[in-house]
Amino acid sequence: MMDDWATSASEATIGADLHIELPGSGLRSGLMDALRDAVRTGRLAPGTRLPSSRALAADLGLARNTVADAYAELVVEGWLTARQGSGTRVARRATPSKPAPSARRAPPARPRPTFSLMPGSPDLGSFPRAEWLKAARRALTVAPHEAFGYSDARGRIELRTVLADYLARARGVYADPDRIVVCSGIIHGLMLLATVLHRRRVREVAVESYGLDVHWQRLRDAGLRLPALPFDEHGTRTDELAGPKLEGVGAVLLTPAHQFPMGVALHADRRAAVVDWARSAGGLILEDDYDGEFRYDRQPVGALQCLDPDRVVYLGTASKSLAPGLRLGWMVLPEGLAAEVAEAKGEPDWASGTPDQLTLAEFIASGAYDRHVRGMRLRYRRRRDQLVEALAERAPDIRVSGIAAGMHAVLELPTGTESTVVQAAARQGLALEGLSSSRHPSTAPDRDALVVGYGTPPDSAWSGALDALCRVLP
Image 1 (cartoon, rainbow, N blue to C red):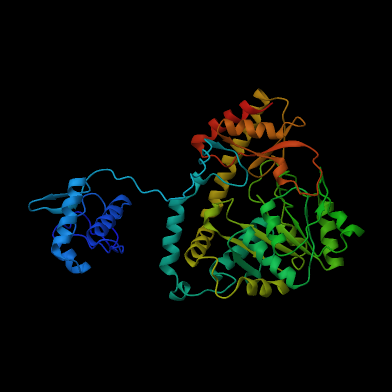
Image 2 (cartoon, rainbow, N blue to C red):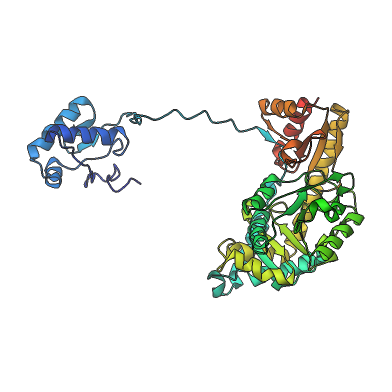
């Protein structure tokens, strides 16, 4: 469909409504310049029928002969064609667009990688479309009319009720529906929490020495300072919170079930230590349940929240278990904090659409979510095993860690080789991430490694991605 200044070429009996503006120069030359410009820039497409000379003259307040002479000269120049019974039309030929006088040539686009082993994304090709559609039909069929109006800032009660049951059963979370706030993902949840913490005069939030900078940035944006806690083979050193250097800390952000990116479950002593700190200091624990659903070689590690629901904010999301494009996450909050976070989110709920919330509620309640998670757990475990086998055969000096759960592995490299390997991979069309991109700015580099997301490629690309990885490893 063309814009309102020109009808389609098939509307031969009507012609084009040109909407051209004449410059202040001579009438005929001005009309010719305006028509040339309209054709050159594509505003008048090839084959477009122009108004009759009589009609255009009336529209522009010109003499009919002026328009007829302009048409005739443009026909001679090749801009227009004129045939008996067909009227005057834009010639059917390529007309290069007129470049902007000062336009700069855009830099060449970076080629998209052939393969990606970037962490943090599930296999998007495995999204359960058929089951999701069934859940959507069932949910929307029975949804009350008011569900499609402006919603409670905490999220739809149907989803909060189902989440409370699921999280209690699957993750050991104490979750009352009134203490759950639906958000559009972990980042959105951290933005809301940062706002509330700042209002409560919290100025420092301790973080792990390795983690997701995009999460840290949301806290920094709220004006919070982020001192880093040390890390060792037992996980984050939460006992450091009681030391004098961190007296000003009012909250701590942790990934206790499967530390990102190192892949260690927080040791029981350190889980107890951080809860003791929160109780004695009046602090708050922000628990990002990263990869909590995917575990392979160990018993499930329950959520930290169950140790003290009044001191722990539990953050979960459908981004890894289903797809980040759903933009659905949730927070289970201490009783006194739920109302403040809902207020920060705002009335009405503008961040999370009702249809997807209702669909997810039905998807979980029907058992489809459990079936999907079990299926993906088997698939990711199989990929993990294939990765370990390939490395043992083709790069036996590379040590692999952090693979008891989750969708990524840490591959330790010889000192000084991380950036070289990442660059070599890029030249071969493989997107890789080095461990340094997850290191807190205050943490001294202590190792070179890759963080390999084996959940990211679709099945069709998995073997190719694995091959490309083995080729670039030292």
